[in-house]
Image 1 (cartoon, rainbow over the protein chains, first blue to last red):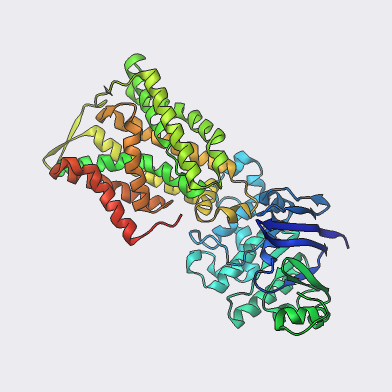
Image 2 (cartoon, chains in turn purple, cyan):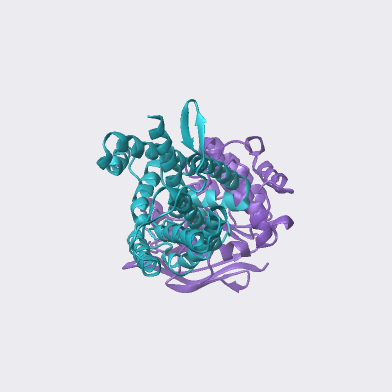
Amino acid sequence: MSEVLTIRGLTKRFGGLVAVNGVDLRVEEKETVGIIGPNGSGKTTLFNLITGLFQPTAGQIVFMDRDVTSARPEQRVAAGMVRTFQLVSVFNSLRVWENLVLCVTRFDAAHSSIWKFMTSPATGGTIRDDCYGVLRLVGLEDKAGTMTSELSYGDKRLLEIAIALSLKPKLLLLDEPLSGLSDVEVVDILNLLRRIKRDVTIIIIEHKVSMIVDFVDRLCVMNEGRFVSEGEPSEVLRDPAVQKCYWGKEGTRGC
Amino acid sequence: MIYTLMYGLTIGAILYFIAIGLSLTFGTMRVTNFAHTITYTIGVYLLLTFVTQWKVHYFWAAIFAVLAVIPIGYLIERFIIRRLYGESLDYTFIATFAVSLIGVDVVKWIWGVQPKALGDPIRRYIELLGFTFPVYRLLIVGIAILLFFALQLFVRRTMVGKIIIAALEDREKVRCLGIKLDKYFSLVFVLGSALAALGGVLYAPITSVHPYMGTSILLLCFAVVIVGGMANLKGTFFAAFALGMVVAITARYWPPGAETMVFIVMAIVLIFRPIDV
């Protein structure tokens, strides 16, 4: 399998605070990697660096054999790197299906040039069908015409994932997709993620460790801006350093 | 009283033309654009030149004046505003205010400081319910209402419109959809500049034309944007007409306080609905 993402020595300083400290990470194609760690350990900052919302202080990010360290967020998305946010991020002032319009038109022939994109109606061609197709995948087709502001939090989370999927990602970064959800909604989202993980490389940040242990191929534990443990999930959770991080037990490595 | 209401509707329409650009610019780019006055004022002076010196018919002169400010708006966005994206509001305030002061001086240098006047270009009146109204004022109100519906169609039915709505709500999220916002920001800015010029060329025949005309009306337009809700396109429309009425009714009963009352209303709105920038 080829490497989709390679991170070398990634560092981010905010004044005197080192939020991410020399992180190395390699993610293979179709692999699912989980990142866990206490609050403030640097997980979301790492996502912001990978996706270009923050510029790193040092280090390198290679995505699909291309150095994207200084690329803008939109260039990374165009290359196939897509993310979701810790706080669910959808457009409440649009209808559910309209949230996907901006994404599916990227792949629509009728909107291939800037001029066509600017002048074509937003509902023309196969756009609506394409949007409904993605909504069907996540189980939101029957709410396609609803105003997004009227959706439940769980449905908004599904919609956010639908937006990400409509961008046809090669690498999908999910920032705490299970947070704030009921047990039923957690099951729905995990079932969806299990369906899509066959086709997409995924990095997932999650606090509900028990929920993702069976879902991820590899688990990385982050603390104070560094990876303190990495490997097969059940082994990582037995690592004394990880146990000390989460439960304060003595371990062999401090974290 | 009915004439006071007509006056209020006219002022409301003019405020709407100018405020909609401010609202869009602030909502999408987070820029408080004091330079808006310049495209407004230059549009008016170009109209004046076309009509009085080149003897162009008012209708065509108005169209040419609005079109002529488009490149000016683009240049201001490309070389000044674009450098301010993501910067503190203080910087955008200082930079755009400086542009507005430079613009006023340029207007004084080219056209002089003496106030000028254009007459009502239609000079026709219509009788409704026993009252006589100038057709030109009704036309201004009609164009404002048409513009409102046209903008609603634009933002709801076109891709650019949907991007603008999305950017009004969450710029970073739009960028994370792989959309480069710069060109849409340019478009929004130029559209706002052209609408300000449209407001200017429509208002010029019924007001006094002078280099500071933009500065005085801009403050009223900021009040409209605040009362209507930052980046709220429908709110801007209704706030413009509501504050137009406030100006007209106060001017009837207490002329010195006409504009002051607008800011009192704005202050009351801010007390009950503080803005979050």
